[in-house]
Amino acid sequence: MFSKSFIISNNDVDKRFKLKISAIFRYFQDIALLATEDLGVDSISLSKRNIDWVITRMSLDVRRLPDCDEEITVHTYPGKDMAMLYPRYFFVTDSKGEVIIRSASIWALIDNISRKVIVDRDVISKLPGESAEDQLPLPEKLSIPEETSFIEKRTIHYSDLDFNSHMNNVRYVELLMDAHDSEFYDSHRLSSLTLNYMKEIKEKEAVDIYTDASYPETIVVKTNGNVAFVGKASFVKE
Figure (cartoon, rainbow, N blue to C red):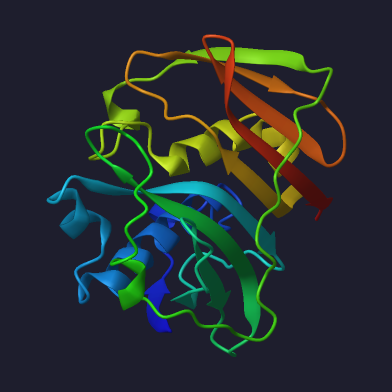
C-alpha cells in the first residue's frame, strides 16, 4: 500500500470550501502514478513503450468532504487482477485516521497505436494484489436508461485532453457534476458515484449530455449518437 498526505488547497475547493469531487479524482491519479513509478509501470513510463493505462469503471463513496486547509492522507493499492483487467483501490483518511472517502476502480492496458487491449501480463506481475478492511466493492456495469432528457452539447477542446490526446477521465466527472448548478450544491453533496468509461473522446468531438432525472441520477454522455460514458450519482442534503 502506498500513502501520501496532502493539505487541501483553495484551488481544489468549491464556494463552501469543501473539496471538489473532481479534485478527489486528481489526487487519485497523482498517487497512482507515484505508487507505480518505482516499478516502471506508471502511465508516463509505459507511454514511452506505446502502452496506456485506461480506466474502464470507477466507484466512489463519500462519507465526508474535507475542508480547505485540512490535512488528508490518500492511500492506494492494487487488487487481484482479473485476466486483462486490473483493479486498484483508494481511500482517504483525515487527521484522526478516520476513513472519509473510499474508491474502487478497474483498469486495462491498451496499445497506444492500435488502441487494442494488451493481454501480456508482465506489467501486473510487478503489482501483487492486496486487500484491506472496508474496501469498496468493485464498480458495477451500469444500464442505459430508456428515457432521458437532453441537458447540453459541448465541444471537446485542447484543455480537456491529457498526454494520451483523449479527454482526461477527470473531465468526464466534471461533465457529470455540471449536470447541476451551484444553487443545487449549496444544499447537496455527492454521497456515491459509479462511472463506466466506454469510449475515448477526442479533441473537437461534440458530446451530448443527458439525464434520467431520477434518484440515483444517471448521466449519459454520447458522441455521434454512441454512448461514451455513463455515471450514476447519489446526493444527500446538507
